[in-house]
Image (cartoon, rainbow, N blue to C red; front, side, top):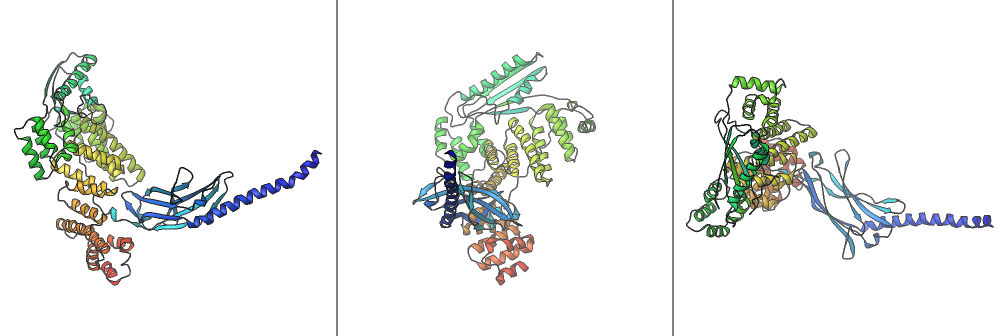
Length: 593
């Protein structure tokens, strides 16, 4: 009986399996056929390189019938370049929760990016659909579809500086200079912070110093937009109490400590001084100065400043640096001869003597006596280990940046820059100034850490400094803003960057990318006034000519560009921007001269 039952059911089981397989195959095949009706949009098209990335937006809309229970449809996005190198960029998955319905059809909009490299300039962007049976993993592919060809590299035609220098040595000039430690506070706050901008660790080192006497002066202030009457006084008291408590806990030498404090509700003279090293235009400076030097009350002045054209700049870049307390500590140290310093420093560099045979200032000075980067690095490392002070960290960071610039191995370069950032960050903790944070921002910028670089450029600007350092900071900040596609922000930054070649080239590029070709032409011509016969400026004007269909402007400037720098010949041949002119006699003639 049982035997008969099995024989009777066996054909039914085979039929069920065949039906299941056939049904799956037919469904996947139908999904692939339906995918022919999908609509794909890429923006921008052609793709455009920005900085170290190629960013684009992909929108895909598929027929509603392609969405089925137990099945999934996805689109793989990939880029092909060189000798058929395939780089996977990402995917769009048409599953519930991943798409929205637009006019009754499933739709996905997604941002993608992939690393830029010159080898990718003539590559192609493809999509390929895959229909998937989620129950058994069976797949059916659509034919690959080309959706974008080549890269526009115009956004890369910018100028960056990121030139950072070692701290000028002051060992010979002023051996008795005091140590100055600034502390910064949040609005209306008096609490010492142990994160970015804090000098608490350095202050602790002074607390541990084994000296007979210490004389410490604490000067505190507050910004005009802080209305608590005693916030500056409380800031000075907070540091005094911290120091006294730490000395009581940690010091066993019995040294005599004298702490003097002063405070000002709003230090208008400090504000005037910071304005003189700001990037504000003269008309705005004069307006603010008139208010500050007037006879109104502090509250009236603060209210009047809020109504000025410069107020946004004051809030963002000046007031944060006024919420501070400054700790000054004086020491006198014994001096050694240059000859003795250099011999001891050489022994430290060769690990023949302990690092603590020289002070940090002595090591800093000794490092300036040798031209070798490897030797400088060892001396600054010894200075860091010996005294933990900001110039050693800063100069060690600068040396790592210089070593990275000379190393063409990508991984080694990245590792060196990471060490530079580590040391420059510690320098910033101990000495938060515009110069230090500009250098830290530049190291991040060179390494490709864009968000971190923007953050530290902003810190540098808020701290204020010389006109030169502020203009350099605004100029390189603008270059980074161009790289990430924030052209309006770049133009705003360049308003404060001075009338330099870099400023005008990058203003021209910003306007070109915003399709304001008249403005772009104006700034590129100004760049040529500052740097006659510049190949980049002429090439950029040729691009303006191409976009505005001014063939004479294109050919004249392209000819001057390739005459000044022959590398622009090959670039022009491959540049998508000149696609409509390639093959024309005027264009070919411009490249041949």
